[in-house]
Length: 205
Image (tube, rainbow, N blue to C red):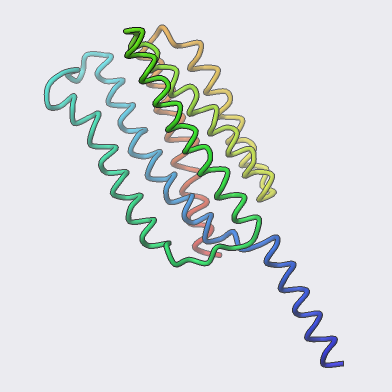
């Protein structure tokens, strides 16, 4: 009898490891997206001000707008990685969740090289505008997968928001002011807010 109970407990623990264990991964992803959305969303708002001639588009101030958000995010990301380096890996669901966002991040870096190379070779800086479009598309895919892994409908709405943003940016390519404003709103609404919700929810869990 005792053996049967222990066996049942072992089976239950195994099943929980398959479907659960995503809290730590959610906290990591949520924290990273909160800071990424906040820093780059503010950066895009500053670029919008540049497009309106409210802020200078050259000089030290313009350079700071380009460089400072990335420096801050690299620092924050380094802290997150160090803090979570000894965290348990979790079950297959957690690994799938982490892999899809990591894969999207790697794809974004690869496409950044592609667009940078194309802009240099063809002397067409406008090609860089397609990189945020591709980033938004990958975000939509990642959040859609997350909605299926975590079984949360509101994550599907976030994914839909990213796909709508992708189309909007493609349409607004010729209007740089509207382009960066829409991108800023998307980062703050579709990345900062969901990141905060996932981060805080995972910590409470």
